[in-house]
Length: 227
Image (tube, rainbow, N blue to C red; front, side, top):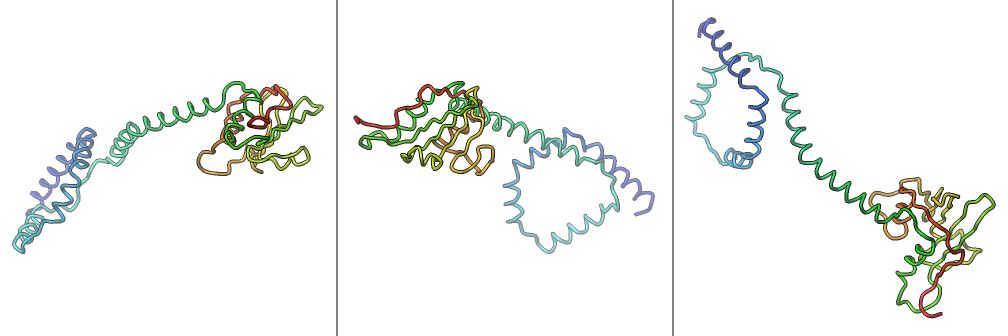
């Protein structure tokens, strides 16, 4: 093949490729390839070639060989198409999950709750276990207007053992949790992956949402049954 003909073929192929590489064409081809991926993969895996077929393929390849083709830059185009497709599919899922999580959080954390209501919820898990005290709720007011509340839904503890309670809350003058220790861990320190449960989960929700806790009774009901 003469230099003139080779140059003409090179220019023709380069122009044709450049004209085809439009965003619309690339997006169409991506969608088409994804749908046909499995069928084409199986076809390639099962296809066999004879020696003659290999020779013909090589001859055609040599005849159409071009040393260099100047392609337009399309990496950014492909990336943009993929990004849009991913965002369209994923954003809805993320928004739905966040909405569900927020609804659950608000359900756990009302704007205001009484200490006696928290105690009632703690006692419910012990209903049917006989009678007598089953939980610990200790209220300790200080001279600064804030109040320490010690809670334990698994054990009955005396005033002397209040620091052994699983939950120790400092309620500020505004009724919000100023600080808290949940099973020896500061509420402000992330300590696990996943959701908490029971009283642990509720206290975290109260703290996160700024729930006001009203100390309506210093000596709330801590037992079940007729005692």
